[in-house]
Length: 326
Ligand code: BTN
Image (cartoon, rainbow, N blue to C red):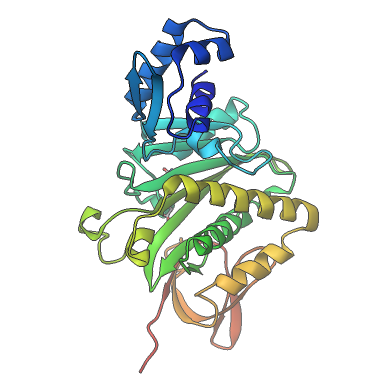
């Protein structure tokens, strides 16, 4: 009912709508309308209520509320079910729980704030309230489990394309970091539940630093991280950006289902800031560190490194780009 009330108020474009009109439109009592209006006000909607005129929507909160994200969202299934939290430990953990309980393909879990946001390689992810987009996408793809890591590449490309629509050109550092001038804007943590030949679900967790200011970052990340607002020099509408990301994700995902991963990998190569660079590989195992030149990614999404005249494949780990010698 809240969604319908909001629609009526928004359609009135700043004019008042009487409680009686809303009540009769929705087939409920005026006091039921009043209760819902109170709930909306508690969420941060500024609604003027004058007993003679009715209700006027003055402003909407800067929150990723499902009604706001859904309003104008042009997708068929990604984001059609948004599970929203004001505060949660980790959207990835919640998404895995919901996926195990049967949540639909394309379900999104989003939170304004995460208390224990998770990063890759057991790191934590700083997720302050209403400054970023901290979300997880549940997918149930028909491809094989070994293709699941490429979902990370898909998420990265979708964000680069969405950011371009907001006038910010960013690059991808293998496998999934989105950077601007070497500083991190976005990270993705993909988790999966699968059997040998079948994926039960994939959870793509993405953290986007949208409107953080330099002073918002804790000391340990302030020199290596940045935000879209810092890069652009002005705040960005998180709701509009979120919508654009969901739309890009759906387009790319449908493309993969229809045509395979090759076109996606080509797009990834286009936006990569890793390829062609001298890099240090920080492997997951003890003796896995080495250096070389990143020459390509293969069909599996693995990074190909030329080192000592040979090509080595990197499936997991971290990459640091070595500064060019002057
Ligand atoms: C990285 O280390 O680069 C990955 C960071 C992933 C952070 C996101 S925020 C939303 C989702 N929930 C989590 O707990 N982590 C991911």
